[in-house]
Length: 343
Image (cartoon, rainbow, N blue to C red; front, side, top):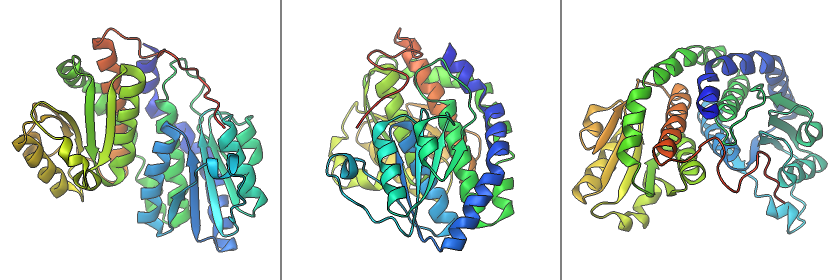
């Protein structure tokens, strides 16, 4: 499968993406400081939006700079002139050709933002419209679903965060990620076991919290895209404000639960879901959480940085193998094209 080949190439892609963008990321950080920029706004669609959510957590935690999200219709439908004079606007797009993303970037630059594109096509309109363009350097893929470009975007965005923070140790924290990704690839039999356990199901609630929200949304997206399954992601705390009523006997819940700052939240929701009879499919390095699983996978221990990459590759492989178990082709989902053009 092309999707599997592209996933397995992620360690090499991450090393390349980090190398080609480090100097430019340092230049961006220097300009942010020189201009006194106090806010960052992110724009992206699909997997790019999910990578942007991880970037929000990286940046707010490590730099204290608030990160918001641009909604393209404000510009493309309502023709609003948004004042971005004290903002850096970061647009994320694998193709760099989505009309709405480029429109937001053009509007931001016109209204005095510092603009940064993160793209896999340095000749794209998006790259040309930005003050700076950072290269995912992931190469041309064959599978339609974004996987290694998602990982490359995460790496590029995290490195930008590290440069904004001005702390060299943050850059060094990525050095161990390729080895951790190898442990995920070595665990393919366990991931396939998880996929077999859910292959006859078509509705899923995906739960997590914090930095893992971007990864949970990515799993829900890949369930939709590759498995043709209805899936919705919720932050655990948002889930408790209404959607918790969905839980009953036989409801399928996928929980992404690294042993981190949110560990008690994961244990609490696993306890509640188990008592209500939900089918819990859990990815975690916490034995106390895994004890509630109908089917579970013991994950490697991770930190705030590596968890996004490790769980990101895991959920991509999981969704891919679910599609295979359903007799579907995850490389070429129906109705979709490589480049999605929206306005």
